[in-house]
Length: 207
Image (cartoon, rainbow, N blue to C red; front, side, top):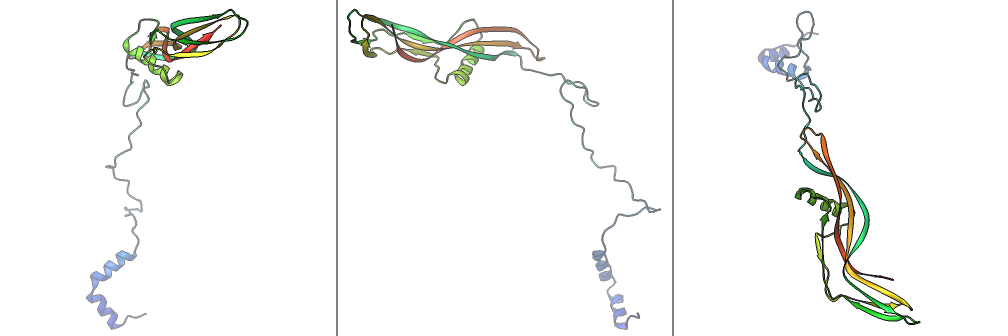
């Protein structure tokens, strides 16, 4: 189809505009090398680094990495054992009659129960034993507790019976184990023992 003189004049007058329109309309395609082969990717692309091998394993670029542990003594187990009573004041009442009688006990002495570890250990391990006892066994344990003065308890004592009354602290008892960890993560020097800490003061009544 022949172009009009008017159309031909426009192309001659605006050659740059026609080139821009063609660039916008045509999709970009990779440049083809001679023979129709696409050039290889640029060699300046940064490769993804290889992962670092786990500790103790051999990597092609890193060598062997020795495992490391912070040396020291560590508590690794704790078991709850039967709780016991630490009496600080003792009294009793004897009823030799054939009927029940009322009674009242009053604590006239005080005493202190302190957190104790059965064997000699470092201050750090002793603190760890108490912390684990508090966190996993009994949240009410205390480093130390002194019983109160003048605390009373009353009730009835059976006929022909002797009622005993002890006032003191209940103790939380545990057994524990620890070992020493070397910097290469080997362990040795296993140690074990028991410990107790007060957690509540009370009257204990029994026949």
